[in-house]
Image (cartoon, rainbow, N blue to C red):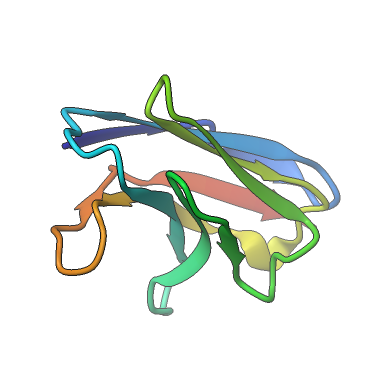
Length: 116
């Protein structure tokens, strides 16, 4: 499975960005996709996750501001980020896995920078 992420950039606080991540080579119709992020000096942490036939999960810090969605026909997951804050600045990594015990695949990471 290969993941191609796009959509990062520089935005002012209060602004919006939309990240996209397209998966290729995925053979399982049951899978989970989503986003983690890592800021300098911090561990990588979950931002949001969505299953192919299940609901969504959000980190408390982004609940109500970020929305994750997916287009199964395109094997693509999106992260709409609104009301961005400087603390959202990080490298965002999309991931894919086919469920418990399966391999995790990661995208190349896309930088999101929010200026105050």
